[in-house]
Length: 120
Image (tube, rainbow, N blue to C red; front, side):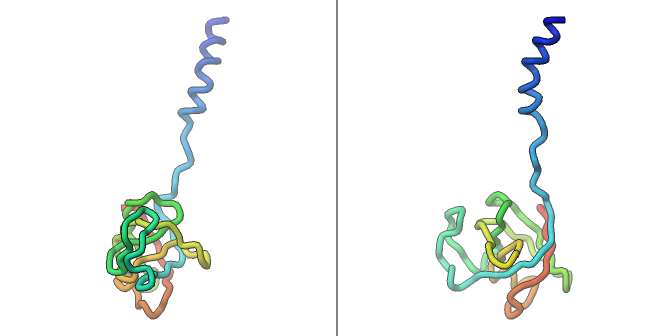
């Protein structure tokens, strides 16, 4: 009996360590905006230089390098982007796309679009 109790005491911390961790949702929806010329050549949060023509975006939680398929809910057009920056931190937006990426799914003049995204 004492041996079983001793084994349980040793195993309990291991069970806590091996418990599933909170997992980042692999998809979502919300408002997306774009950023461009004023940031051209500046360093993004991952250290690379920003290019407004690249298929990149900022997201608050996904790791740098994560690829997302972003679909405009109004017209069904989509683009695959790579997360290379953190943000956006304005207006409850879920993504800040480069101008090049945004222009593939919506008119840049719109400024924002309702999108859904999923990890690819």
